[in-house]
Image (tube, rainbow over all chains, first blue to last red; front, side):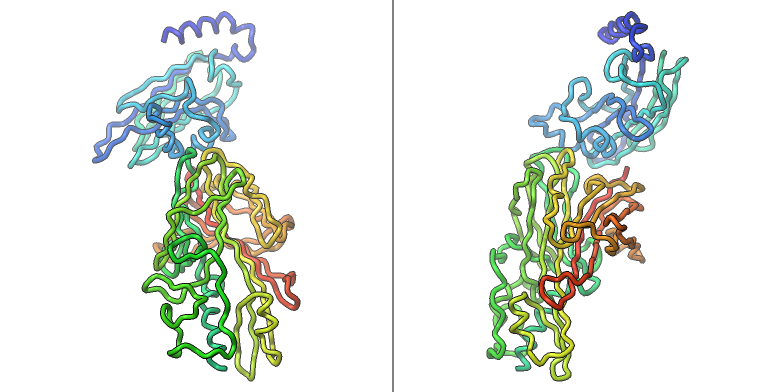
Length: 175
Length: 319
């Protein structure tokens, strides 16, 4: 958090000098992992990314998986995040610093990104979708999408509700 | 004399089971998209009526199963040779040596076919833990290199039909045998040269394209859309090549798996365009069987027609 604030400040100072950075806005993504009453439960693998209208990836935000397993054993199920795997995962050599993260328990999890820092610093003005995909071992898979415009003129707050493998997904953009 | 001709006809019926009836030959991988190297897959190989269920015969592959010797089918019994005891040759005792003994309960088996597993780096991979059952063959394979693997069963041969003394005869064999085994006084002789290629594809990590390099022989797939990057609702383009050149006007048939639990076959019929390209839009996710056929007069043996077929098992993902 402290690092994020620092980056934000430096962004404000450097911002006017850079065309890209002047678009900067801070982004907060909240992903809810639902509590499920099932016989065999494993925490879901979750990927969050920003997609361009043509389906390509503009920014990878976060991937939650069994990153701490020995010998990259946890990589085996990354392809079950089918859409993320196709759009980004298969081109990456996981784990990737700043992207990989362990799986998380049921509950709401907030991810914050400064507009001036990777992965958002290079985001061009335009229409995008926040995509959150979850896949659970011995369970299902779900994709939730929230469209948004970048950069935001005013504070934007939008939500989408998952049905099975995801709870609420909230997107907040602060110019 | 009569018996010896029967000897020729019987193996023929069995060999023809795949191409001549509704039966389809296929390789079914346990997965086509894998995250990483160090993974294994298992592959079923069968000739079946309903896709993709084991309901007819195993596909006999060289190097797969305990009774799968590497080698030729062996000589055909000579014309006029004494018939073994009993009228109809049964599998097991009394069967000609050329026919491998199948698993119990099986009918007369097809000859073994060669399978080639080509890795993304051009190496070949041997099938592991092979076994052959009543309805299917099965083997495992490790994926040690990143990229796309091609599994291919390539075969062929000659078929002939003719009339001898008013009786219709059918024959199967190779080019050498054709000259000596079709009687000189046979009438209405038609010869068909068959070439067959049965494939499937598997990818560990990022899809690669090295395995698609054509051999220039028979009917082959030159994918425009990568066969391990297929998604429901999207259009995929495949170029078909005959002898390395675009196969224009080839008939293409696409059949979704899961036939047992629906009424219609729901096949998609298409024809390749002038560039040999066919476009398929996948109605839903699942395993598909795609077949292309070209018939022409470019057989290697004189006065014969050629029938070249290509088929592949393709997995279509849900986006």
